Structures are given as structure tokens and as C-alpha cells.
View 1 (cartoon, rainbow, N blue to C red):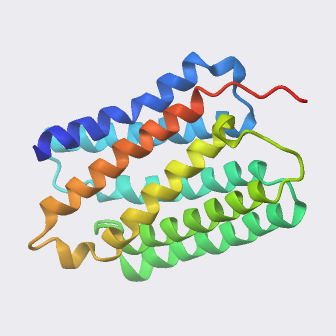
View 2 (cartoon, helix red, strand yellow; view 1 turned 90 degrees about the vertical axis):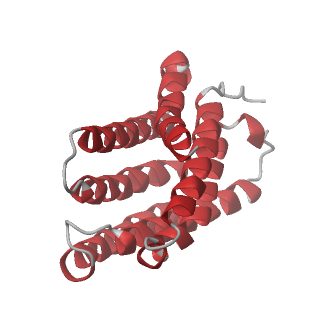
Length: 211
């Protein structure tokens, strides 16, 4: 069961990329950045699978690189998603702090050959913060919009869902690895599959016509 979920989790990463290709002419700057973000993640997952097939002793550097690139992508995605200048500046300043925190984690907490538990926690906190602020922005918009037709609404929902669930797994990874590693991977894989479905729905949304 675990192997099937792991395989399905990796394959599900292709769903939003394929959805983006089908709907590419309707994608705005934010969704195109999100497409590149999803493509990077699925390539990272496939590379990790390849290292397991080749029986590479340690593939943790791939995870570290993925986290750093994820933070950079998310900074760009939310920078263009926010309307107000003060929020854009907040994204840049908070993103810079997160990058510095990742460097600190890499040097002093989790080395490049160790599982990036602290770095994943930083990434999760950053994404949860940005996604909540995005929802607040939607609620405070003066003009009426069908949020269910906004592509990034679904993507933001998927990001919030995935990181809100998995942040506790990332934080407690070293404590869980001894006795609960199988449960960890099952929870992670299920949430990843659901998130990728939400991402795919967002990628298939058509732009709304102005009233």
C-alpha cells in the first residue's frame, strides 16, 4: 500500500503540469510561475526516485536544493499575486529572512547530508503565512469575483492544505523516523496527491470576463 501511494504521489505531480500545458494560452504570469514551480517539484521527486533505484546512499542534497528553489519560486508567485505595494514589499522582506534562515539551517542545524527538517519547517511557515494573507486579500476585494473560478485560489488552497498538514510531520521527523516512518510517508503522500489535484483544478480555470 505504501509503495502504491508513493508512486501515485510522484505521478500526481505531473497532473498540474499537464493541466497547465492544456490551458497554457489562458495562464497569466502567476500561473506560469506556478507551472515552473510544479515542474521543478516533479523533477525533484523523479530524481529522488532515480537515486533510490540506483541505490544512492544519500539523496538529501536534492531536498535541500528543492526547498531553496521552492522559497524563491513562492516569493515570485506571491509577489505577483498580491495587489498592494506594501504586501509585495512584505513578500520580498519576509522571503529574504526565510532565505537567510534556510542558510542558517543548512550550516548550523541540518547539514546537506541530513534530512532538512528545520528548512522544511521554514518553508511551511512561509507558505502558510503567504497563503493566509492571499485569502485575506480576496475577502477584502471591493469588486465581486467568483473565487472558485480564480485559478490561483485553488493553487493557494492546495499550498495551504499541504503545508498546514505536513508542517508537523516536518518538525517531528527525527522523532518519528524510528517507529512511525511508514505513517509519516502515508500522510505526506495522501496530502500531496490531494494538493496536486487542487493545483490541477486551478491550472484548468479560464480567466473571468470583466463585468
